[in-house]
Amino acid sequence: MRVLLVDDQDLFRAGARVILDSQPDINVVGEAGDGFGALVAVDQLRPDVVLMDVRMPEMDGADATRHILDESRAARRGHRAKVVVLTTFDLDDRAAQAIRWGASGFLLKTATPIQIQDAVRTVHRGNSVLGPNDLLSLLEAQFTTPRTVPAAVRRLTERERSVFDAVSRGLSNAEIGDELHMSESTVKTHVGGVLRKLDLRDRVQVVVFAFEHGLR
Image 1 (cartoon, rainbow, N blue to C red):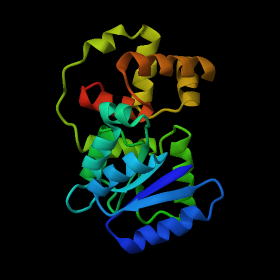
Image 2: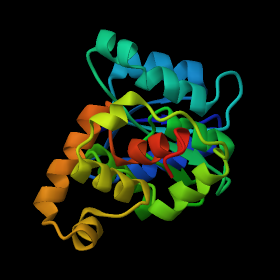
Image 3: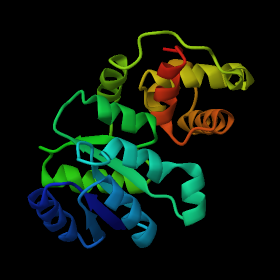
Image 4: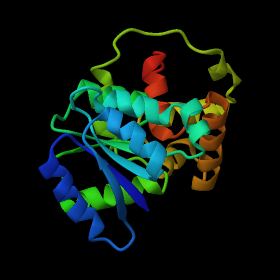
């Protein structure tokens, strides 16, 4: 897979490059030192995964994530990258914002080499690198006021709404199956229906959606 490193610290980028390039299935195709450089590099290099520092001068990682994952920009590019944000704080509000804008998760910059390698692979496979408790802690600090429930939620079937509620609580497919007495394959089908009807990218976005609209 192709990886882009974005961080304003040269030393961190150099270390991350060594960690990732040591793996036969990972190729670091470029680096950038700020958000503006990241936008140019994504358009030119078309990486699969962007490892993005959230705190940078000029344009920070949260704003860069928003632009990179913007649907119209991705359509013009003809390529969709995934983003993992890096932060030095457990409850960084800009990391939370990046998650709201579509990042597939976050890592602390103190992560081990193996954790960084595994995170890149996990995101490339279409999963998140954010544990349920981490995500809930991030978002609980961001949303305190109930919001209007969108009309799209009313299009969910009763079973899909139950699955939506379970996913928003951070449950895995296996846990949802146990709770709702369904097979994992049936849960997966309902999760897919929820994502389609609510126009969401992944499970992380389900949790964000639930917080944004006061459904948690």
